[in-house]
Amino acid sequence: MHEAAMLYLMARKAARQTHAPNPHLVNVLRTIALKLHQPLMDRLITATDFIPQAEGALEETAVLEKIVTCWVEQRKVSIRYRGLQSQKSTVHLVSPYLLEPSLWGEGIYLVGYSEKLNRIVPFKLNRIEKAADTTQPIIASDSFNEQEFVRNVWSIWDGDGELVTVKLRFRGETAVRRVLESVWHPNQAEPERLPNGDLIWSTQVAEWREMLPWICGWGADCEVLEPVTLRETLMGEAKAMAEQYGWFVNKQANSSISAASDFFG
Image (cartoon, rainbow, N blue to C red; front, side, top):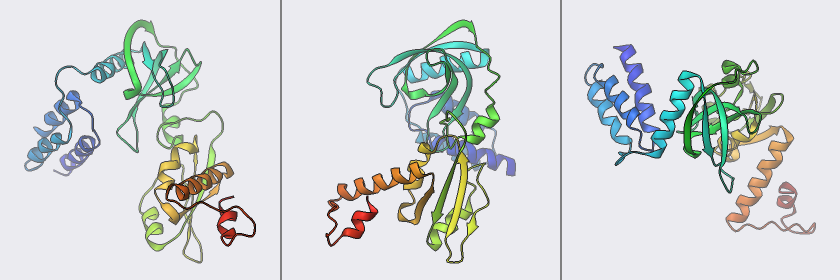
């Protein structure tokens, strides 16, 4: 019963995080539901209502099927991909190494070696416009370690060099308690409580830019201490947000808000 409950929770989480039609997920959740005790069976079947229904075949489903086939059969896959900030799509011949879900959203990523870029790249599946299987075997990589990759990324982005230490200060009883409730990353150090009640939290990640939405979500309860580039990026975001809400900082030294000017640079 307890194992069935864990399976139910994982399946329900998948259903709630899926906001695009996915007939394969609907089918597998309903298959799992039939194996569960009541009332878990009925509740999991109801949970599939969270997943939108599609009329006819979907290109996104076809892309997923092609990539899964090539990944399982260890063959290269040809994809037409348009990155988030790209003006046009490009074609990549990819050796698929890993299919991995995003920890902080519903996205699924194909991690593989791109012959066009000559490096291992994470490709978000819903940005792949077309996928075609090939008969070419994948290019094996001695440098790619799946466990190490998953451990070092914040969600899915890999870095180009050494791991970066991100150090944050959390203030306020509620924020500190919430941080201590969870293990946010496999590499995180033991949190340090300060005499004034603040908390120092740190971890090592491959790419700190992927942490920005999570850090911003804490608002003023979180201060970036390291690295300097991340701290400066957040200072710029704070200034932009102030201006978004009509607070334009006066940069004159003799201004009555010179303290704010100093803070925003």
